[in-house]
Amino acid sequence: MTILIISIFVIGYLLITLEQSLKVNKAATALITAVLCWTVIAITSNDINHVISSLSKHLSSISEIVFFLLGAMTIVELIDAHDGFQSITDKIKTANTTKLVWTLSIITFFLSSVLDNLTTTIVMVSILNKLIQDKKTKWLLLGLVIISANAGGAWSPIGDVTTTMLWIGGQITPLNIIKETFIASLVCMIIPTLIINHQIKGNIEFMAKEDQYLNLSLIERNFILFIGIAALLFVPLFKTITHLPPYMGMLLSLGVIWVVTEFIHKGKQVDARKNLSVNDALRKIDTASILFFLGILMSIASLEYIDVLPQLAKALDKTAGNINVVAISIGFLSSVFDNVPLVAALQSMYGLDKYPTDHYFWELLAYCAGTGGSCLIIGSAAGVAVMGIEKIDFFWYLKKISWIAVIGFLSGAAIFIIENEIILK
Image (cartoon, rainbow, N blue to C red):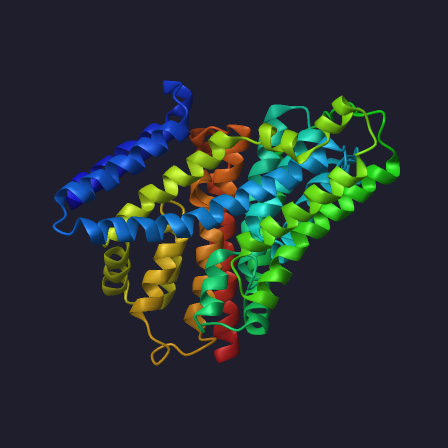
């Protein structure tokens, strides 16, 4: 059974990477892969009730991410429908290529620490679509967005799901993780920014400025931008106060902004009101990318069910022995598999009696699990979102961005290790 499920997953994974050649949407492939993996589990299991219970548990966990993504994409689409991002693009837009690249990278880095890497990436994708016309340049900048978003999320207790897991599990504390991993994460962002800045030659071709809806005042546009960003920023605050999952805060934010926009536009003509409504935004979001997200995560969940990922973590520990090698290996593995079950496996392997709260290992693991996913486009929620929304080819990313992400990832890890070696000495 195990070999068959792994084979189905590998074949499905390869077909997803060959989407451009096969002309088959990766969402379809991911969904088929997920169902086939769980079908094999169900057919070969002696306890179908346990399989169904486990499937429901995984679906519940994954649905939290899916509904979060759905809410975030809708809010961003609504802001875009009101031309709200134009004021931001006007500020980022500059003839100085170096200034534009660094501004984009720095904004993404810090914004993802406050929101999270997934929401930040969705926002930056929308902004770049309003700003950059040349596809090659836009894709390079989107690669930088993925790296910067993951780096920014790694040093914040609410910026990446694995860091949040370690915080909730008692392995790290908020102030300490910020203090210990900020420099490493910053290096992980700076070096790729330097490389990509060097790769973008000449002047950047910008999109022509357009007014989408002439019946919208500047006050209305800026108000929707403000309330939209405030709604996204509210999500981590809601989680901190209520301890409810992030998707609950996102759904609340969506509901509030839905009511506000309905009230603002109630006096407008039917056609204008329709184009500026949440209903219209829901029709415009890329549902295929959400289904792809669901399919790939359910496929990975099947590997977790058959104990492949925990065994992989244990094998790493036994083979490597050195905690630096284990943490860095988890970073690379998180670019292929989901970092959540990998980190969860290590949390169950190592108790707080062996590595107490704020131990060096947990801090390095938080950095590696958060940033290692940038090495492949399919290795992080940010990358999967960009791949789904912008249809970036897997092999294009592998050729153009992966090596840059690896250099940034390893550089940050080296800085972290050296920094702690100096402190220990």
